[in-house]
Image 1 (cartoon, chains in turn cyan, purple, green):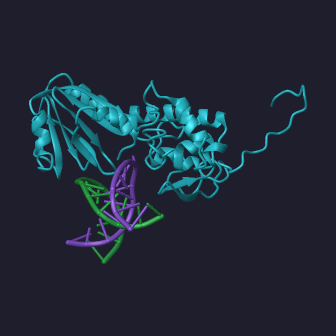
Image 2: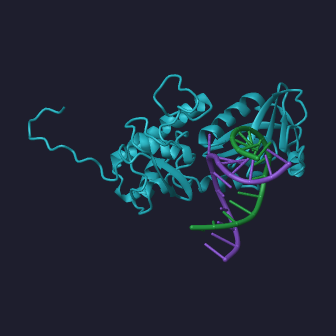
Image 3: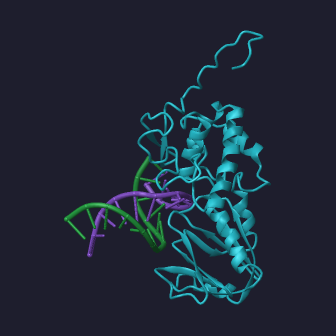
Length: 270
DNA sequence: GCAAAATGTCAAG
DNA sequence: TTGACCTTTTGCA
């Protein structure tokens, strides 16, 4: 189940397996027959990710895929066994076959369709061209909570419910702080953590935020769905923000920043 | 066998 | 703010 890291890894894998070659396409489930027919026997020119959106550019048209909450791609060796479950789109390459099931969106884009989707998306931590300043501006001028803002794809594209909780924890920011009250250095930290963590997610193929080499299953996250805090052992709280459940540690993520201890001039920093 | 949950988004009220 | 939608997996009878 996908946040931005999943889609970016997918784009790379599809590009590697199917890119630059002719692909056979069909819709075993039958709900994308016309679309599959449109690209069948065409060359996959480029697989590209933008936030949580995937674009598959073929010779004559571009396919847009959004996995939503349940969507999934399965990779199998060609010749592949019969589709398992409801496969919306099967892409068959020389060596590998990819089966798509359960997407929220799987559609042939009209001309200009890709551009109009990208227009609506905010800064993607996995893209070098990300317009960070614009994202910061939107956050700094909003009274909505930072927890809500981080899920808004038109501000930051690619962060989902797990990453937002983990990033806020790592940055020590309380999720209910209004965007306008988040300090520039905290925003900078949130952004840098996003880049670092999402990249790690792409590399590992799953979300791992804890600072351990080989975290065991169930020990990969700091706060998401946990009851106690890994760092301070205090009770984790959860609130609904942006329509989704969000977990945080009230001790490690104080609502007010801890007062900076006043230092007399000339005192050496600790 | 069935219910519930799952890393998401959009449109209706 | 709520419900609809997409599908698979897991847990409980």
